[in-house]
Each structure stands twice: as structure tokens, then as C-alpha cells.
Figure 1 (cartoon, one colour):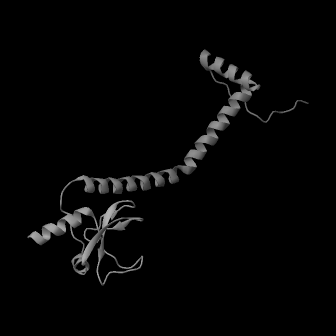
Figure 2 (cartoon, rainbow, N blue to C red; figure 1 turned 30 degrees about the vertical axis):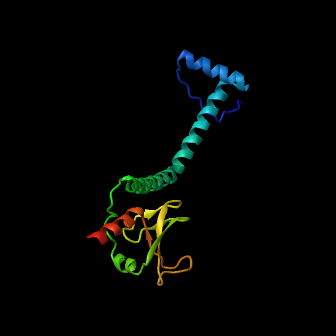
Figure 3 (tube, one colour; figure 1 turned 90 degrees about the vertical axis):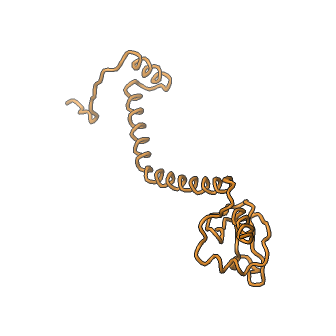
Length: 160
């Protein structure tokens, strides 16, 4: 009785250069050409399966990165534009700013929104914190923060 093989035979024609490459790689790895081809095919399918399985995470990470880059580019563009208008005032910002007696220039240790226009003030940026009897003295209290353009607009508002 002959022993039946479970593996299937697939034949294909390849260019002479590919045949030479396969034979050299098989000799280098000390396997047969057939085994080298099986290994390459299996590795390729595992690689493709891994990429397909992670594509959702890759897309999600890419979208998040694009949003961060967009936010940062808007912040940089706003800081470099040289204009003195801070942007559209947020609702209720005038009342909060009316309680401020003075502004002190500081460097942020964490991101904060500008109280006047809402632009995200990045960690490490030079901004202004409001000082006054009614502003919070403890971290996390209801402090007012202004971007440099908002402080410049305060001077313009008082000149009008």
C-alpha cells in the first residue's frame, strides 16, 4: 500500500532570476526550495493577516494624530499671525474678565483654554493668568487665562 500525502502540489512558472534567488535563499537557510517557498508564503499570509487585524487601530491612531496636528497648527498660526484680535469672545467671558484686577504672565504647566476666545493654550506656552480678589487661589479654582492676543486686545478695548 502506498502512503497518501496530505499536502497538495501546486506548480507555477517563475522567471529564471527568481528561481536563482529562491535556490540561493534555500541553500543559505539549509532548507529545500519547496520548504523555502512554503515558509515565504506562510510568513506573507501571517504578515497580511496581522496588518488587516490592526487596520482599525491604525486608522484610529491616524485620525487622532491628524486632529492633534490640526489643533497644534491652528495654535501656532494664531500665535504667529500678528493680529491683535483674539477671536470671537465666548459667551459669559466678559463677566468673568470684569472681575480681574491685573494680569500676570506665566508659563503653563498643562493645557488650558483662553477664557476670552476658547483657543487651547498649550503646555509650555507663555500666557496670562488673572489676579483679583474673586479669582481662585488654589490650583483648579476658577481662574481666568488669556492668550497673548487677548491681552493685546484688552489695551485696544480700553482705547476705544
